[in-house]
Length: 112
Image 1 (cartoon, rainbow, N blue to C red):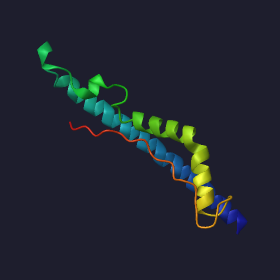
Image 2 (image 1 turned 135 degrees about the horizontal axis):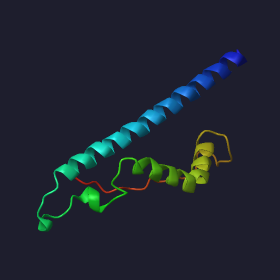
Image 3 (image 1 turned 180 degrees about the vertical axis):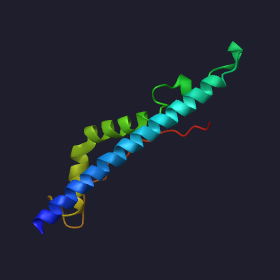
C-alpha cells in the first residue's frame, strides 16, 4: 500500500507540473496574441494615445500574475504556515482561535 501511495504521489506531481507548464504557455500565448493585435490596431496619430496595457508593462502581462503570486507567497509563507497550522491542529493554537488569515494583495480592475 505504501508503494501504491508513492506511485500515486509521483503521478500527481507529474500531472501537476504538466498542468502548470500548460497554464504558463497559455498565458504567454494570450499576451502575444493581445499585444500583436494591439500593435496592429495602434492609431497612427500621436495624439490618440497608447493603450493602457502598453503603458503599464510589464504589470499588464498575463504572465506577470504568477510572478506576483509567487512573490506574495515567498513574502508571506510563514504567516500562511502559521494560519494553516492553527486552523487544522498542526501547531499551537488557543482553544477556538486560529491565527489571522493573511490577506491577498488587491489589484485594481481595468476594462479593455
